[in-house]
Length: 179
Ligand code: RP5
Image 1: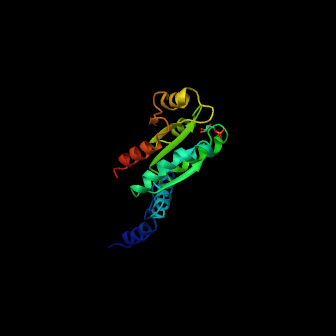
Image 2: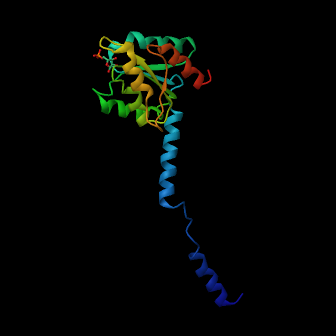
């Protein structure tokens, strides 16, 4: 090898290309996905899979039947009271975070102008089952809530069971989960 070639070889060593990673936006997206996967892995094994929501404490006697039916089937659930009209931000936050928390199906019961199931469905793409409820001031035996829940606009579906039939909502949730 000539002296010149030797010098060139040595100079070339210093010009070896730096190892390059993925472009910055892809690297960031991968990091976010990795963090999400880690968060899901860390979910406790006994985390609830079905959420049972209702617009008022006065709905609890009717909605407890959903929890009973889920428990009978060995399906873990969590029950929360939150009103679409009285606490709209709480409802939106809950619905937006439900999937990441491991919830698979949301059951939502409400009476009167029963917006809760529809508002939840507006903030998540999880399946939402609405339970129209009767309450002290219902009209037409709960027809007000039945129409409020079932008459959703195209593209934002809410499954709707019969008036006060929270048990059927739980059975349907179990079928969606194939349990
Ligand atoms: C709805 O109004 C609730 O779901 C409940 O069925 C009804 C009456 O609520 P309270 O006045 O008893 O709190 O939002």
